[in-house]
Amino acid sequence: MDDVAATPRSLKHVAVREYVRSLVEGADAGAPAPSERELVQRFGVARMTVRQAMDALVSEGLLERMPGRGTFVARPRRRVGRLTSFTEDMERRGMLAESQTLLARREQAGPGVAKALGITQGDAVIHWKRMRYADNAPMCIEDAYLNEVLLPGFLQSAMPTSLFDALAARGLRPTWAEDAVTADRASVEEAGLLQVAAGSPLLLVARRALAGEKPVEVSRSAYRADRFTLWVQLGEET
Amino acid sequence: MDDVAATPRSLKHVAVREYVRSLVEGADAGAPAPSERELVQRFGVARMTVRQAMDALVSEGLLERMPGRGTFVARPRRRVGRLTSFTEDMERRGMLAESQTLLARREQAGPGVAKALGITQGDAVIHWKRMRYADNAPMCIEDAYLNEVLLPGFLQSAMPTSLFDALAARGLRPTWAEDAVTADRASVEEAGLLQVAAGSPLLLVARRALAGEKPVEVSRSAYRADRFTLWVQLGEET
DNA sequence: CATGACAAGGCGTCTAGACCACCCGTAGAG
DNA sequence: CTCTACGGGTGGTCTAGACGCCTTGTCATG
Image (cartoon, rainbow over all chains, first blue to last red):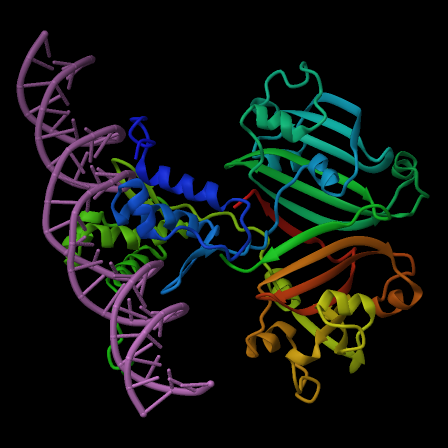
């Protein structure tokens, strides 16, 4: 009974929620959570307060209620379309991601880039072209365009390895993105950079990434199809 | 056993929730919802009951609470990775989807298909190969494998246009799928079927679709890259 | 041994209040 | 005229109960 009273700012339902979350994190699916009445006793709060805490965990898919039986750790929901950076993506595949900047400069937005970034043609954008390597072999060529207004002094600072990290540091980590995926054959120039034969199949990914409601990045990536498979998880309506 | 059907138990929080939903559906983002105290008056229920109703709508993203101001219609959330069938996909692009069956028969599952469907090698599967047309021009070749145990008599019934509809009729509409996307050049046979030159770029989509926890379909689709662009929406963690 | 009645404990629903922090429009003060 | 203080309305949190239905385990009975 001593834990909650110490901090004045502590909300009881948050205290209960986080207590249960800590119990439940790492537990196997199907393991029972404390019963509501038990939590009422332990925290000395009303049952509605406990229910508010549990409701939050249930609605975020961590717990599952079974009337008449109890509350249990839910089977982890299948993920859907998680947004990852190249670096994270390669890490997940157990590969080492590296980059080499081919070009990084201020340019004027062309019509396509301007529309995708929600700015007007001719506005300043940052054009960053990189070779992307995985385990020391070429994986993709990436052309990224960033809204310069949102990223003052970006070109002056040291170029980070991960664009997502740099955006996150400015509170602009993309929260939503739309990819258009198609295929084509490698041009002579692309083939040279990617160290494949001209005409080899490439996977082209055009991305438009938003942070909240603000478009922050548009990019075109050309992946070597012999090394890269895009994984996409799909679900139905919420 | 008591007959419950006679008394369709009207849950008050459901009544309030659906009332508010009906008010809110079709309203513009930012429009105010009734205040909690107003609903308390209108329905003659306790405020906690009203809050339970509103909480449900808030957590499904329909409403947005603004402390001190009120509750308002939320901006529709950006969708993420919605699972669609070929037919639905083409409809969304404003094209007419048609199909032609090339092959439909019972086979024994090979090792790859068996693993993807969660059955043992040699079990019976339905192999359905189709040409897919959009606006009367070839769009893709699809090889689908279905778990025969889940679909008794499937080959005897008339082949439906939409596989998803057929699955839905048996309560097996896929709820989750995983696509592996890559690119390759068309073989001579593929080129002939798709009416493109041999070596033309193709977008290859290998799908594994589950209904609940049961794998129901695995498929390999080869799209004409000159006609087809795959759109993928990505979000961050739940 | 099999079966059914019973009780305990679980979540689901609901009440009738309470106080708080916050936002905003407005009336009064300067 | 501007600025401030206040009051009414909003959602946020919380209480201390109540009854209902469901599941499960126990235990007495046939």
